[in-house]
Amino acid sequence: MPRIAVDAMGGDRGPAEIVAGALAARDATLTPVLYGDAGIDGQGLELRETDGVVEMGDKPAEVVRAKPDSSMVSAVRAVHDREADAVVSAGNTGAMLAAGMLELRRLPGVLRPAIAIPIQTPHGPSVLLDAGANADARPEHLLQFATMGAVFAEEVLGVARPTVRLLSIGEEPEKGNQLTLDAHALLANSELDFRGNCEGRDILGGAADVVVTDGFTGNVVLKTLEGAIRTILEGLRGEITATTAGKIGGLLIRPAARRLRTRLDPDTYGGAYLLGLRGLAVIAHGNSSATAMANAIRLAARGVDNDVVAKLEARLSPRAGVV
Image (cartoon, rainbow, N blue to C red; front, side):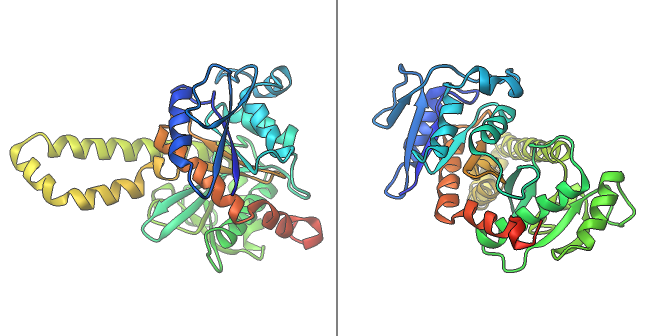
C-alpha cells in the first residue's frame, strides 16, 4: 500500500481543499500522509507537523535552503528517507523542482528532470514533456526528454512501441527555431520511433504517444489547452441553459457531454510526474480542486505501483547505453 506524502500547505485554495482531496483519494490501495502546520484539521489522516510554507512568490533557488522544514521540503524529504513512496504538491513548481534536485537527486545519466503530463486524446493518453521544468533547453535535453517520455509510455501506459513527435511550427523538418532543428536531427538518428514534427493543434487529436518540447513552450501549450477546454465547456453550458429549447436538448446530450468533460477536464489527471529523479514526485496545478488533488494522489500511487523510478533508471543509466 503506497504511502503518499501530501504537501498540505501548497496550492491556491488552502489546506482544506488539499485535505478534502486526500480524504477522497484514501482507500484500501493507498495512504495519504499530510505534511503541514499543526493547526490543520486532518480529519483522521496522519499529519506530520512542519514549520513554514513555500509561497508561490518565493525564489526556488533560495527557498529550499531557507525553509528546510517547510511542508513542501519536508514532504519531499520523506521520500528520500523512505517514510513515503511518493510526494504530491500543488505548490511552487520551481521550488518543487529545486527540492527534488536537492533532496532526491537525479538518476544516473539524467541531464535534467522533466515534467511529464498525460493529456487525454481520442486514442488514449499522450505524454507531453517538458511541461515546465526547464525554460531553456539544449537539443540533447529534448532527446533525453523524449526517451524518458517513451519509457514512461511503454512501462506505465502499456504502449508497446511509443511514437514520438517534436512540437514545432510546422510538420516539415526544416520548420522551427534552431533548438527544434537541432533536436529534430538528434531524434531522427535515435532508436526512438520518431515520426517528425507536429503542431500545437494536433496534440488533443493524439499526434503521438509522446510529444516533446522545451519547458517554456510546453508550459505555455499546457495552460493554453487547459484554458481553451474550460472556456469551451463553460460556453457550451451557458448556451444550453440560455433557452428552453437548449435545456431540452441539453437533457438529451447530457451523458455524452459528461463523458467529454471527464475526458478533457484537466482535473481528471490531476498532476504531472517529475521524471528523472531518484524518487517519485507529482506536481499538481496551483489552483487544484479537491477532485484534482485526489487524482494527483492516485496518479502518484500508480507510479509507485508501476515502479516508474526503477524502470527509468534501468533504461536511462549509462550502463544501459541509452545516454
